[in-house]
Image (cartoon, rainbow, N blue to C red; front, side):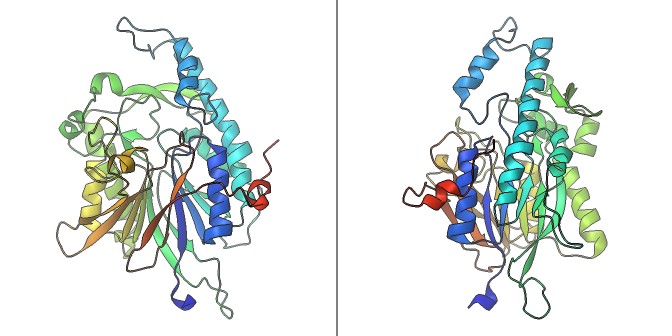
Length: 379
């Protein structure tokens, strides 16, 4: 019966500025699934200067940038910095004028993570763009998680007497990804506390790939920056040390249970979520290690758009605990690709011990005027 219903979640990720996909997912969340909360797992904003445009348009914009002798883009030039700054401004516009208004118009509350493609400097600006005022002690209708965070999801339905939510679930979230060949470095880190493990990642050149661009510290914009890929950087600021510190400060030191639901932009290593087109596993060893250590009930991931398809449509698998082999986490990847015609999402009850997770391809409902008029396009 309804009394046993927990917090119903719709999860997606990797929108990369595709507002049509976002519109469809929000309509589905409100009018079809009637979920309690929408969780977006990072890589929300457009890449570069393209508004969710495909790679071809990005290539045109990139093609004017000066090249090195080997034909690859020389990211050290002023032109490259200008290109990144232009991309930052277009993301700022999308977050503040498209994403936040669309989420505020949807009746279902939402929580957004940033991903490695989202400029960290836009986090406070996205929050500031919200217009809905909440009552004291209420969650904001649109929430933006910190890069490492613990927060609570609640049912929209309330107890008739106490006005308390009928169910809640605690969530641990992480935006960080292992250092890679992308040029936005705000959320990239060494993977584990042993530098050698990061250095051995497939296709990675520590020397070349550490350098790129970060959100400027003073105000609005982009500066040159690099991931700390020293032994000390691995020890102190890797994904592994960041997750350990988060769990220590937010959970263990407060005598709390580890949250049963995790959302990490980076998928765990060697799972349904981390196979790239080349066939190699590019997930995080640190994320997998933390999952094996703490065995949360369900973990949700994005980042590698093609992985679910590379696994023939398989989107979840059990990862056993290291100490207690009887315990296992259900690792789930949404496999959403912003370049495809239809977006994908995962829908599930976060309090369901049986962990029934459904992956839905959200097609437009042509017969339904409501689907088209539900969001008027931002002017």
